[in-house]
Length: 131
Length: 64
Image (tube, rainbow over all chains, first blue to last red; front, side, top):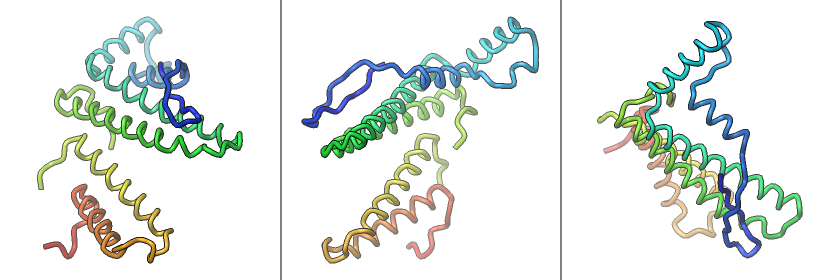
């Protein structure tokens, strides 16, 4: 996963950063995994059932759009972390992150709209979004 | 009123939140430092009210 980093001069450069926790969260959402899965069936049968449900719930496009949405959220968190670190380091130019955060938020919203628009048009996994 | 699609509803919710954010920010600025601040505030209040109405949260009162 790529993450944006703000340089002191205000320019944005790309660097690689992993967000394993967030990826796990998104993956968990994508597979529809729940905590009450111990309640029914053997592990093998349960895995097959989950796989079948997941395939029915999310089409490939929805899965991709949800991942992009998750990436955009991840980017927001990363930028907030970087700004927090800059503030803690008494960086006098910590406000440079504001524009980046604003842009990341716009990207997050656009990713969300693209995902929701697909759910509406395609009808897949429509019950996964509770407004 | 036409039914909103999922993304239309989300766009309106996000817009409403942004307008509320602008209202809160401007509230902390001295009124005489922004030209036509009353008109701006009125416009924001009206936009907020109508967007909420579109979401079905409140009925637009006093609308023409």
